[in-house]
Amino acid sequence: MLNSQPALATALNHRSIRKFKEQPIEKEVFDSIIAAGQMASTSSFLQNVSIIRVSDKAKRTQIRHICANAYQGKLGHHYVENCAEFLVFCADTARHLHFAPDAQIDWTEVLLTGAVDVGIMAQNVLLAAESLGLGGVFIGSLRNGMAELSELLGLPHGVVPIVGMCLGYPDHDPGQRPRLPADVIVSENTYRPAADTDLQAYNETVREYYKNRSNIDLDWATQIRNNLCTEIRPEVLPFVQSKGFAKK
Image (cartoon, rainbow, N blue to C red; front, side, top):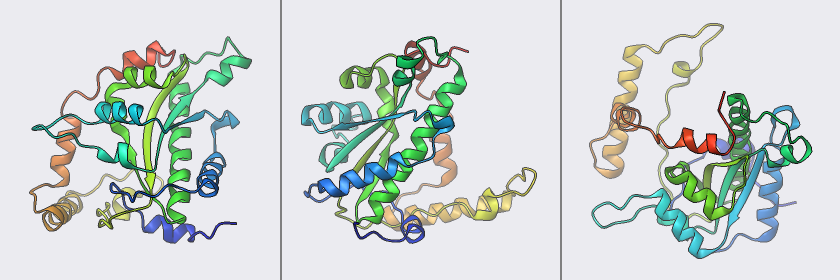
């Protein structure tokens, strides 16, 4: 059995890693991480997830271009190419269609359960990896080009990519971004809206974090506006519908 850190200490120490050493992940370690992922809870034992392990360097480069937009001549997301392992987690009904060709995967609920299963399994994988001394970061930006990615990875009908993950041995020790206070996100019995004073205080905490970390003027309110007050990947719905999902 590999020597791993306790689950609680591992979870509380989480931070996203974007710089990795040029060190491969040992087979025993990788296999154990995937096994931990497979033991994640799954809706109705449907096991709705497939993982694509992308080792081909040319495909990594293409995926990096899907994920990152060139900005002033620079291309971000170098870690997609440079990490030891890059995994793509997919919501997968292809195995279900094998046994039940008349399965009604076009209900939106089917896509939701698949996405939930992906999230649970992917978090298991990352937590196990971190407990073994690895680091990682989720890559949601692969959804910038789901159709292109699907073709690149040969994803069949009933399979859609949900999120990517970079894994490797950390080559930096970034600070933790401050989370919302627990009493802001936890209600009892009925939903309790967050108080304006609590939200404003947290907004200032985030502002101070970015000022101290990167000397930039950025707060949580600005991040919300940047992410939600614009079109949000409008091509996602027609793509998932083309794969048989979310038609009703």
